[in-house]
Amino acid sequence: MDTKIVLIGAGSAMFGLGSLGNILKSRALAGATVALHDIDARALGRVEAVARGYVEQKKLPVKLLATTSRSEALSGAQFCVIAIEVGNRYELWEQDWKIPLQYGIHQVYGENGGPGGLFHGLRIIPPVLEICADIQKICPDAWVFNLSNPMTRICLAINRKYPELKVVGLCHEVVSLMEHLPKILGTPWSNLQVKAGGLNHFSVLLEASYRDTGRDAYPDIRAKAGQYFAALPEESYENLGATKEMLDAARGSLERAPGRRGLWPERELFRVILEKFGLLPITTDSHIGEYVQWAHRSVDHKGILDFYNFYKKWCLEQVPESRIAGTLEIEYWREIPIIEGILSDSHQEELAVNLPNRGYIDNLPADIVVEVPGTVDRRGVRGVKVGSVPKGFAGLLNNQVAVNDLGVEAALQGSRELALQALLVDPVVDDAAAAERALDAVLAYQKDYLGYIR
Image (cartoon, rainbow, N blue to C red; front, side, top):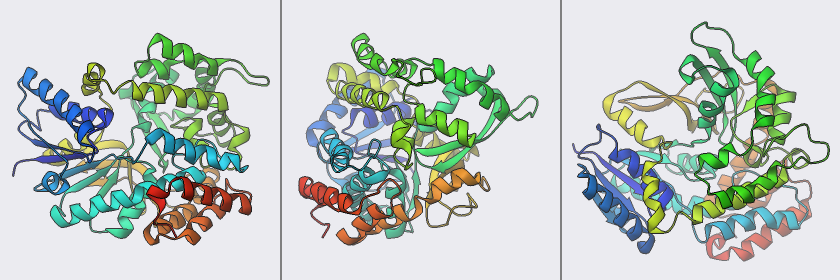
């Protein structure tokens, strides 16, 4: 059977060309059919033009199909990759983030957790479920990889609505370990054995050891990571290919604020978790802070604002055809190596996959989607059991169980009552009246997408 991979949301130059770039470099996928699908014909056409030009120039053995018809794209597919947003991405994100702040709810950022994560999920879950309904009807045996946020809520919703589908959530945040640990420990990544786990955007390094000696590396991490991150300037921006002007705009976050213990750009909460819980987070303040009720007093707010403005500018500047071809060279998308691994029965290890908790983390309930290491073979993707996470961190994770449960049920049932309850069980929310007013304001501003909530 010929391999067919469907990229849903392919009008995004970052996702569409990033994933396609890995396919085009793959010998295992030579001759595969890649269906580029998006409901935005103009955006899809721009990505298709760049992709076809690249394929023709390099004389690559891949068959491209670009279509706004989801049924055409899904017909005969073995693998479906979903990465979507709706509406004006940044305008809606900023509403998710800033409207709760106007009512005195001290949330940090607003993409995956807190009130903003709820609003984002209510907006994205319905169209993702529509896609999954088509997958179940047209290609029910396909593997489905979700890259859309809020990851945990979306994957939980899919598993409740379509439990027969083979769904895996994927996120690249965990690659930060590959970037930073070798520098912290002064040893190659190949000499490190690591295990991370938790929830998406709320995971920590659980274990680390040196392969050559078998010695526990965590004491060295705890001793050295603080100094390393305190001295880390703008490397994360440079790794994104920032221009000089963009770097200049971002440098404001590196200023020393009164009372700071060194320079921790977007890692002040990161530092607290490392010091108080003894665990190294795999992401930065903007994401961790969405889940923690005391985060607002600990995070680097200026760093978060600077990075958001930088990231928004960087993404928008990827749009012109003169620049987006470079996106074909992005390496960190993991869905394509996983597809290769399924086809080749590779038995490879993955640092992080998002799956229902089927005993992977002992001290979290089964009905939640967790982020754990994974293995890949011809049978597909399976999680790796990590045992119990440390009790303190498990307490923070368990705070999110009812939040995710109620938020997903609010989306599945179109229920304002459940949406409000999801806010009222969220540890970030400390004012019932403010929560209700914020919810009503977002429902009014986003009525084109949230009109089903009643």
